[in-house]
Image (cartoon, rainbow, N blue to C red; front, side, top):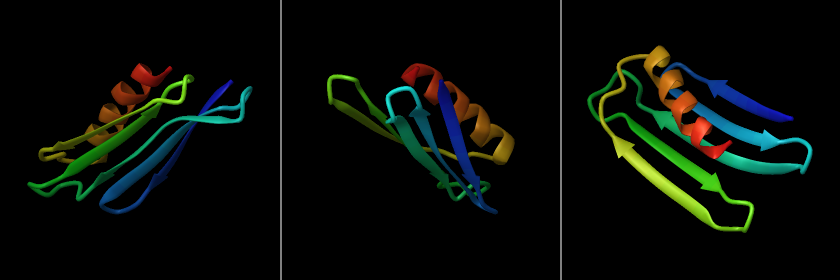
Length: 79
């Protein structure tokens, strides 16, 4: 079973995706400065072979709804 944990603040959202059957973190990240011109989305995906992909996207994220949609797309790639 996979579990997505979200910690939402007033201008940020942090998240981790866990695979509970293997007690492993599959992905993690944060969206910061929501609503500002220089919002940033950092995403880290951990592969089963031990490799890690990291990305950073700087563009305006207008609101938490848009941030959650971006997280949804990012974690779908990790599953």
